[in-house]
Image 1 (cartoon, each protein chain N blue to C red):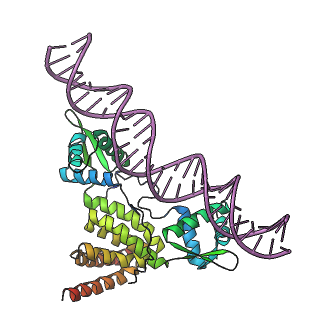
Image 2 (cartoon, rainbow over the protein chains, first blue to last red; image 1 turned 135 degrees about the horizontal axis):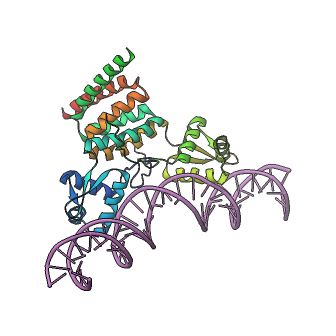
Length: 143
Length: 143
DNA sequence: ATAATATTCGACACTATGTAGAATGTCAAG
DNA sequence: CTTGACATTCTACATAGTGTCGAATATTAT
């Protein structure tokens, strides 16, 4: 490992899927499962100064993207995540990984294992299992 | 799998690390190893109408980001990739995956295997090997 | 010194995101 | 039916990354 300052200047959200606020809002939604804009607003506001409309706008944009559902409740609209965290991570990964694999599958594999080990070593075993079942699946398909 | 059109609207480069042109240029550079702006320009031009300065500008930006090196040759500047494809994919993946893992490691794992299987099934075995050695590495570190 | 080349600058367009006030819509109490 | 409180939508601006170049400037070979 040579950190000879030959490092790529990652600008903030390199390869980012969502902006900060979007992410925070989604996170809040995953917690509450369902909430009005005002509730989400209240949640976000606990950490930073922000206007209600800002949250509403972003919620609206997330809805337009299909990441969030907007349904009319008794007297106010309610929002709920269109995907569970797992599902979402899947969808997103699919996209992102496709792009990275186009560059280099082996390079991506290497960091995948590294990153996973850093983040959640326990997952390593599950990953092995996943690979195994995937291989079997391929076997079957090939007949 | 229900594709009940509940699909996220991925806008063009969701989680994209590089723009189209940047990508094409980098790709050309990886092929040639080293080239003048004009050469890259010629390469890109084979597929689409584009101005020399456009290519130069992007090359410059890539250099600023630290993704390509700019060195003075005999009579013109030459550019070369600062990383091999593998290295680059590693660097980038690291960043991108970090973000996705924060959302859901297991979700990411699932698609990782899927995406890899689609893209390059042969890599599956290597991945298994990678995981093994990673686990051993962790073992050692823990003593 | 001059013309031919190479390199750099400055600009504009377009998109995504964060930000939020203004305008408009809704509905229940008076 | 009018008014006020609250909800929702619209419009708009700022910033940043990328694609796109022409114009200005610098460099070189003749």
